[in-house]
Amino acid sequence: MLHLQLRVPTELTDRVVALLGDDETVTNVAVIPGGYTKPPGCLVLADVARESANSVVTRLRDLGIHQGGSITVTEPEAVFSDDADRAEKAAPGEPDDAVVWDVVENRLRTDSRLSWAFLSFLTLATLIAGIGRLLDEPILIVGAMVVGPEFSPVAAICLALGRPSFGLLPQAVRTLVGGFAFALVVATPLWRLATILGVVTAADASTGPTTAFIVHPDGWSFVVAMLAGIAGVLSLTTDKSGPLVGVFISVTTVPSVGTAALCLGAGAWSEVGGALLQLGINLVGMILAGTLTLLLQRFVWGRVLRPHRMGL
Picture 1: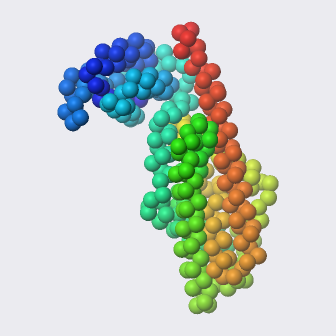
Picture 2 (picture 1 turned 60 degrees about the vertical axis):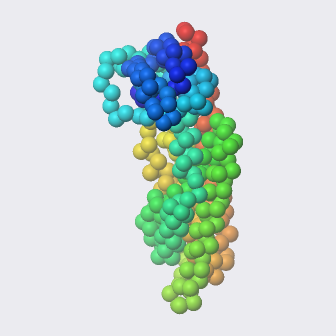
Picture 3 (picture 1 turned 90 degrees about the vertical axis):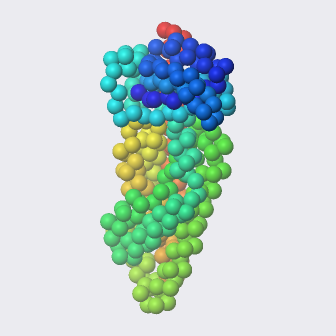
């Protein structure tokens, strides 16, 4: 179940209460007149089955609640109620499969902002990846993948193309491109300094059989990126967030940028092209697969909800 907290203009209260009361997938409706003082409005609370949340929120938005009031959607840890169980059973499909589009978009809009925190984590991940390539240590490469926050703007691009929600696209692209450029600009001079001091050589930067896959992309790179894109989008849009960690450690994006920075700084020019090609392959694969997954989810979930909307 999802919990709705609404600030409703007084003149719309009866219509909102009727909308919620007539929907068998909504329960625990409470109305507190004058519950809000700044800005003023009526406080309406309700629980809705996750599968029906899109429909209910869309109808509330059609009434203009988000313009003259507010709609807050949260997910309780647990709801113990026979009425809630009946509302859940009345909803079509399974709750784990439901996609609450507004919640997903709001999350990605927030997570894909170009902030100092995003740049810091991406730069640190890039430096860790460079050290991993230099020492030929896969564990450091995996660590860099986990630290890197780049999947959020990738997922935001997928949502912008697959929902579609094109207003999200400029921010996501700016964050992804700007983030990688910033990390590269910061890391490259540091590796150049290490080279001047004799800590790193071009030979060191361009050798290491265990992590050589970073600079030698092949067809499997694209396959893995496609699978990771599907898993990442599914984990974000459904009620299963655990697989995101698996996505982080399966795509060679941050390791590619880290290796490119290392090779640029150390003068191992022959490795830079392969690393950047690996980056491009992974980004294209994830965006393509993620967008197609969202389109398929929209199609399938639309078919699931159609009989419910028709009252069948």
